[in-house]
Every structure is written in C-alpha cells, then in structure tokens.
Image (cartoon, rainbow, N blue to C red; front, side):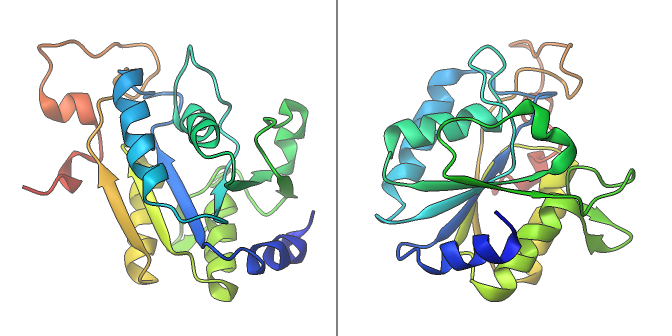
Length: 200
C-alpha cells in the first residue's frame, strides 16, 4: 500500500481517524490493569467505523509499550480498523495480525529515524500523519505517557488544531529499558518526560 492508497482508504472511514501514542520500549507501562482501564475509556469514546494510525511498535505483554496498547484496543474494539505506517527497513519485523494494511516508506534519515521533529519540520512517521492530516482531518489523539517524539507530536497537534487527551500513567523504567521504577520514586520520575502535561 502506498501513501495515496492509504489516504483513499481513510477517506472511506465514517467514524473518524485517531492517533494513539505513548510509552515506547524504553519506558513501557508499569501496571497492565491501569493500561487496560485507560484503553477501555478510549474505546468507549470512539464511534463505530473508526480507524487508528499505528506506527509499528511490537505488541508484547512482557514488554508492554504502546504497541501492546494497540493490541488491547483491537481486542476491545474489533470493529476498529488499524492501519500501520512504518519505515521500510523494519519490514523484516513483520506486523501484527490486528493491522488492516501497511504503508511502508523510506522517507527518513539517520537524525530522524522513527519520527518527531528535525530542523523544525516533522520527519519520518510523524511527517506521514501530518501529511495525511492535510487531506483528511485527524479527529483526536490519545496520549499515554511517552518520550521526546510524543512531545514533538503534541506541538504539532497544537499547530494543526488536532484535539488530544493526555492520560496519567506510570512507566516501568526510567527511560532506559533497564532501571525499574520503585514505589518511593517521585511522581515525576514515575511519569517521565510528559510529567509537565499533567493539568492541576
């Protein structure tokens, strides 16, 4: 599937186009029950005949990151169509069976491999959803923690007037995939780089 084929498929979606972002493999989610509760809330907020854009994080219950969140979402809402956007050098990784179709691209560089903002412009996977938004308005994004790419994308949500909702959720590691979060750590450490998004 190429870019225009994806756009044409998304144009046929009646319920809206959504994004789900958050903790990657270096942070993960600390409590699966909390993750499932949040995904349940999100699933109740999404109309029928909707679609999500997914960026290839591998779903793994033992290493629960945003990829596993997508797996939970699809299990709770099998009617939702999930389209994957990913860089073509990751083809050998394959893709999960909850994916409707895949758009592989080579529009990335060493400084911006997976997404975010580089030299003031969206790049890689981030650039692709921004381009899609130029043709089909993305309805809303749901944010579950996350790292620098997440913060970059929130800037773009604001720039393009895309509604988003941030969910407070603890991470499992201190951003390195090795150092575990402990109960006596500060709430800022437990949440990570998106801590300042918490609205008092």
